[in-house]
Length: 331
Image 1: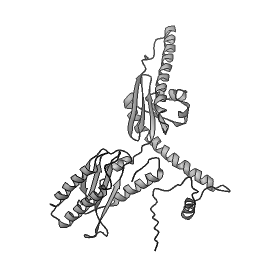
Image 2 (image 1 turned 60 degrees about the vertical axis):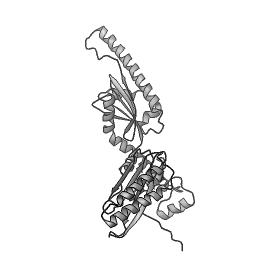
Image 3 (image 1 turned 180 degrees about the vertical axis):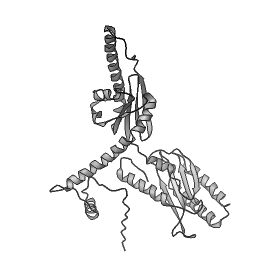
Image 4 (image 1 turned 120 degrees about the horizontal axis):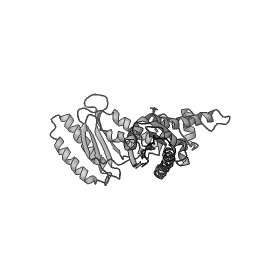
């Protein structure tokens, strides 16, 4: 199974597969999880599994020995469908799953998954459950956000994808602090200081625009900092006009690189809210269509299936909690 993150149906199926695999439980250590890194020749992995098959002959329990060896053999047969792992790797799950809870009812089940992103892991594990953590990690949010942390002394511009910082650049202003003495020279000093700060803001914004515009899929921009500078910066038109409606401001105790990490933590409710807002927008669109005199929307299982089979749907909304299977039997 291969996943395109832009394909919501594929993402839904991937999540369902993970959930299904998570529900599987074997007896003892009879379930095999095999992670193969990108582009590794399958023949090397099969040779390794042959060794594990021989080692499994030493298992004392006759039923466990048989189930483990059958699972290894099933994994080998599935691997023969591939010459090598693809650019993102390959994952095989194989094991004896009890069908009615009793000993002797086990049936060998085998699954293969092509990860949506590279998994640089070579792993063979036997357990009572399939090892799914590396795949679950891929299901974590991968949306792209910009982060700009600024005060009058330093700034940092970063791009985060999911929980990972993929770009980071830091700056210093070089602008001295406020002058506390009075008089004409103090006022002149303040004017020069304001001019220098304005140039510093422009410099930071120019680099931020250059970085952020490389990511047209960017969902939002977090502007943060320990003082009022962030609000002053956000209110002016320093950033590209297309970012105006994407800005969210948070307070941080730090600026610079440490401030980026803090801003990500403090903006977590905002990031979750953005995802909810997109879902709510789609639901509102549906409700708006339903209330029209000649609606271009349908709801209900039969009506949706009819429209789907007729090729009339441009958008389909499904609950992730939908647990329903349709089986068609032809005699």
